[in-house]
Amino acid sequence: MSDKKIKNVFKQGAISSEFIGESIAKHQTKTSIGAHNIFLGQVRADIMDGKTVSAIEYTAYEDMANAKFHDIREATFEKFELTCMHIYHSLGTVKAGEICLFVFVSSPRRKVVFKALEYIVEEIKAQVPVFGKEIFEDDTHQWKVNN
Amino acid sequence: MTITIKYFGLIAEVTKQNEETIDFSGQSATELLEYLFLKYPDLKNKDFQVAQNQELVANDAIITGQELALLPPFAGG
Image 1 (cartoon, chains in turn green, purple):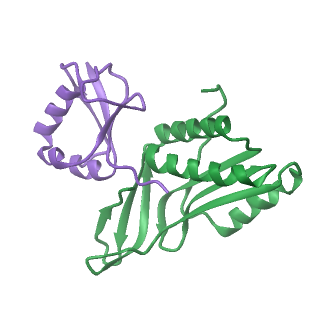
Image 2 (cartoon, one colour):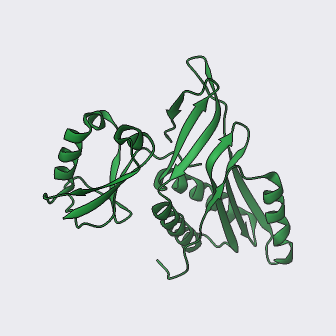
């Protein structure tokens, strides 16, 4: 692991389309880039036993999670030739249909960004201690589990 | 030794608190879990992993007194 400063990946609430758009715009000055790839995780209105998920309330073991995000970032830069990489994850309440995870990778050429993005998202799902309380329309809840 | 244990998600619902400090005389994570199962019987049938110093550890890991946490299944993304 390098001695680079550990970034805070978390944002309170949903990740807005304006924020995502601005992130893309910021890369227009980086003209060595020829390909971007973006993953957006969206809260799904799952139906279980006739009840519909209206939102997910995210919590995290924040220090460990940010350290894991950092490790994933370092491992990804070692494996893939990327120009840059950005990860944002929501904390707190995100309603069904809103974005809770934004991963953005860029490279001079296209092939690497497809592989890198999948790697990052799968690592996040498996390694990062984030917890999701699925809240139903009648205010009952259950705890989400990644599979 | 005095140790602080953090609880998250479903586990925090069972323990009804996000963290607590206890006086622990055992050595391994197994002994710590035995203590916690007596205190919170409902923990026994919950799925969780133990982290020490922000890394996942096996149940027979030696407790060093650093930060401990019980982590339910991850749900990021």
